[in-house]
Amino acid sequence: MNPRPIKPAGRPLRGTVQVPGDKSIAHRALILGHLAEGGLRVTNLPDGADILATKACLAALGRQSTLPCGDSGTTMRLLMGVLAGTEGEAVLVGGDSLSRRPMARVAEPLLAMGAQVTLSPAGTAPVLVRGRRPLKPLRWRLSVPSAQVKSAVLLAALSADGETVVEDPFGTRDHTERLLSWLAPGIVERDGALVRLRPAPLKGGRSFAVPADPSSAAFFAAAAALVEGSEVSLPGVCVNPTRLGFFEVLRGMGARVELSALRESAGEPVADITVGWAPLRAARVPAGKVPALVDEIPLLAVVASSARGTTRLEGLAELRLKESDRLAGTAAALRALGGEARVDGDALEVRGPTPLRGASVETLGDHRLAMAFSAAALAAQGESALSDAACADKSYPAFFRDLAALRG
Ligand code: S3P
Image 1 (cartoon, rainbow, N blue to C red):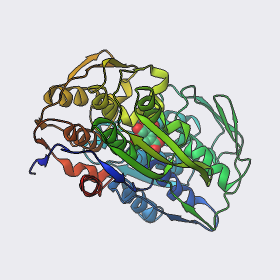
Image 2 (image 1 turned 30 degrees about the vertical axis):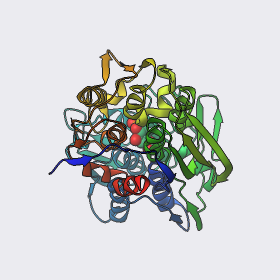
Image 3 (image 1 turned 60 degrees about the horizontal axis):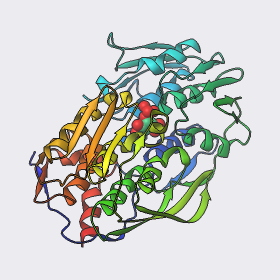
């Protein structure tokens, strides 16, 4: 595959970008719509490969014993929860990158609920699930900050004969809880870190519009913060606090970040976001803040290279388990562009401001790295080339088109 050339912005970025619907919410809307009485009409679905995988698996559920999840971790982990509470047997298979990611974190609670789950000896896919109904109710404390694990347990808990309690001391994204509450008021109760679910019928037969994805909006926000004189508007973005960490840190670094026209859509807060350039200063992000910006760490590292001082991002162990080793991949790509980045255990330190210069950047086939380093390339001196930039298709197939439109 030819590397994709990216030229520096050359002039301020100004305009509006309508980013696609939120990937995390879309997976949940499709799955819960499948389970709800009367179904759900879901609009503004993103058309990335991950969502297509969830759609295809749901269409095959009950008809086919092998369910291909592509490289979508959310598809595989959430469907493990659904299958655990469904009588019958199915095998979830993944592509190369998904087949390296850990699945025991999901299998463990589902086994405790009485489902049979078999993984490869390495604790990875293929995942065989033999479900059972009813499942046993469970009390489970998350040992890793993963909304996917929490959601799998909650989806299984819909088929349990009693109350399940999940403790999430990390405050991971809560889209499953919100959508469940919208479909069955009172089904979920939250009490600090505890999420209690008592099974009840989900009432569908309605429409649900997926708000725009803050993780996709973040790339344009970063570009605006990096290219002097820029201002970019991002309408209709999900501003759920469990997802907004990047925008909060960006504002703390000095960028202009304004939220307007705050509204609600099916239990999710939505707003228009405008981001404007300003001189940036370094930030410190402790581990506790990472779940709210876990997918934006590579992008934050890029932004940090333009900020005065040393930015330190802590508690990043989970980044090694994403589509690629994002911790090593981010540091290497930033250094390729002339940035100063250092991995220190589970932390990442970036010193700035360091002028970036165009270079060849290795994306490791990871969509978040491809898009984060496209933003970096806009702010660099000279042309860059991204390996395997088409991997952006995983979450945002129109990314390069939208980027080109913003550049004018
Ligand atoms: C997601 C949760 C996060 C995130 C992923 C989507 C979700 O993963 O990185 O992109 O939709 O629940 P983990 O739950 O494994 O942290």
